[in-house]
Image (cartoon, rainbow over all chains, first blue to last red; front, side, top):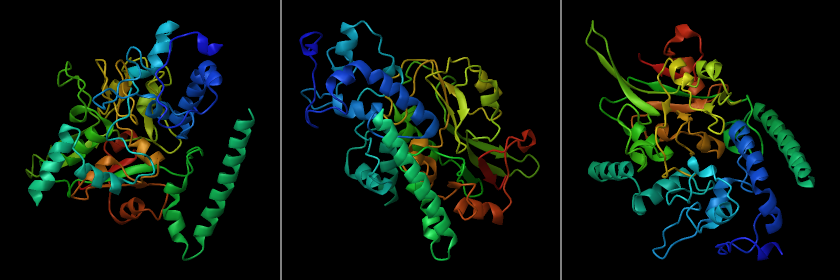
Length: 139
Length: 253
């Protein structure tokens, strides 16, 4: 029933069909879970993945034809579709990233591995380019 | 509901497990446990005041003209050259989490460079003046801005003796997923809190410093490298007269 109303969502099923809770619970309660997690993270440094906004984005950001991430708050994208339909302003993304960062690494990946990846992948920012240039120059 | 309960059980278990580990560390030969403790905090366990994170900056080692720490911070936290944002802001408006400062002794002519950033005070003036409670200190001594409740009044910027905070003047879109930043809020060095929470045991600036001028560690742990260094050598707090007990200490100034 709930599926018959509202906009059709672009859902990325690459990571499976299930969200962290059943879809009807997420529709109703996602903001409460996010709000709760927000304070736990901010004040207590608790960074569990289940209700982390970062993990929402990691799963729900879609890619365009050029294989680039589309911001989740762009028209027609996962977050924005429902928020536009219900006329609820989406404040999260005034500060939070709207797509996974290509240089963002999973917490279990150590910094040494990150450093290796930094060298072997294309540098993404000017400062990384500079750093790389320095490294090459030093050799 | 039941899930919260399970989380509570897990937390109790980890708390007890942590306590046992700490006891074990007293025995000789098990000291490694203690060193590894920063990494051992499970993701779902709250931080505590057992740790107090800080930095020791040796300005004698800090090389003139080098800005590796600033670049690393920009890249890690996606500000300045690490982000495509803030094109409209002028130099005085742009974010600055860390900067290099050159001190000159007029008598002797000697010059020192040192990195300057949020000093993560134990008694932070920015927290005292914040009208909404957005500026706060975590249990482990890291001073942060809760941007969810920051109204952008900038009292903290005026209160900070170290000029460590910046205000964001324009809309941003190129943030790092680990480092939320947004228009109308104040921000400053977070001591790479996202790295600390995931157990990296270092900050971007300390990692990047090829001169080993920046040392990150736990000021509460007498066996940590930073505590050992601070016990061995005379260190300074900038504006020590203010009695703020800063978490960032300096050598050689």
